[in-house]
Amino acid sequence: MNASTARAETPKMATAAHVQTKDDKHAVVLSLHVMVEQNGATWFAQGVELDYASAGSSMDDVQDRFARGLRSTIEANLKRHNSIERLLKYAPVAVREQFKASAMAFELNLVSSFDLADNLPSSFPFHRLVFAERTQTATC
Image (tube, rainbow, N blue to C red; front, side, top):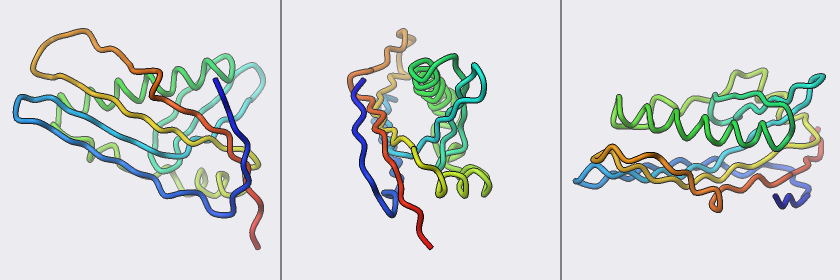
């Protein structure tokens, strides 16, 4: 996994897009920020612009669990509500404030497709998922 460090004063805006075809195929594109922190032996990943979180045993494990869990959550929402709109909620204010003050955060870019017309097993395009390390400078 390649991570590139960059300093930024203002994080990029989050992006969410959902496209559906007439034959019930869906494509979802997300670009959001994810805070990752370690507490003892457990690692936590928390979305900033999307209130979704996961835990894991290592940095790689928590990133993998976050991506897989988010994909499953998206698919469940598409099946139940035919939309991702209910997912599009910011994390609580305390999380967003912590993100602003953090020295390290990650940007998640997820592109995934879902064919809900068939009952095919889901596959995840890992080659399209990027966690990029970003450091921030404090602003006064």
